[in-house]
Image (cartoon, one colour):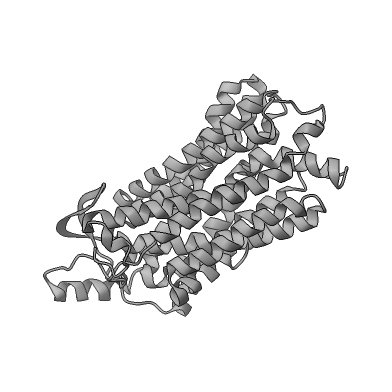
Length: 432
């Protein structure tokens, strides 16, 4: 694909999409701190009890994770900034807020839980939402005919960050593998003194990676991806399909496959697939936000978000009730993050081949079954089964954040995606 970005022009055309998507994955990697919350929750709670408030509990800190999972309107702001400033500058704006707020958390956690909520829960979360949406929109422009795959790859970067971040957190804070007391909290001063320093370490690592990734987040030359990237030879047939699509629900109108075939190569990303018909007419923002499809996606993210926050936020605290090995629980967190990461690619690619409804139905059914049977793992007192169950549950976490953007793009088009997906994410305000 052609581009006017001077840096991306240095790469051969077939590698440009790969370069931009790789940069997007790097940026998303730095934003995945929320999926390490279950790992650092005992450390944060123990430090606040030691330094600020002896009555603080792990249950009360779940509010912090709720804000980190989706600060209201940050995704929507990211969509508007992408239109106004472009994806690179919008993502840079969000990255500065996010990384700067993490650094400030070094001071806020030493003063009060409220200030930690402000720096880490509000400002850092706002930066995450802005950057996340800008990066996702930009990368979808480079492969508009494989939206499911791109959404899976990009969100995999977000989910996979915890695979490396979680063990870094544990090794930095608790290198001696010290255990919690009978109440489930750490009391060792040498461990607790390292908790604030973790924010500085993460801010430095994330800042360097973001600085590099932003350079390669270039625009494709043709950004009008609201229509199919493939041109049908019969324009009249396309018009008939467009008129017919207006009569069907939005969730179905963009999921048809034309009979023509095309081979497209983008570096390591090579596809031979039926050309997707994305020729639905341009939809006004008002029509998008009042459609049955938008309401369905809004409620889906709201209900799945409750399950996601419960799973990702409390799994380690739950595991500590019958597993007395902090390194093992950090390993569970790391591999769960890897499962979350790679499952997003699988769910996105599967949705490209099947359908959103079938794929989301499978993911939700599997997640519900795993949640209902988690208590059996404690009864059996099996560390191995706990590892398997948590990893499987995190694969369902990956499904939600891969399939919802996929469906939003397919139903409303690239032009409306940023605002539509931002509005869908407002559903998470119900969890705060």
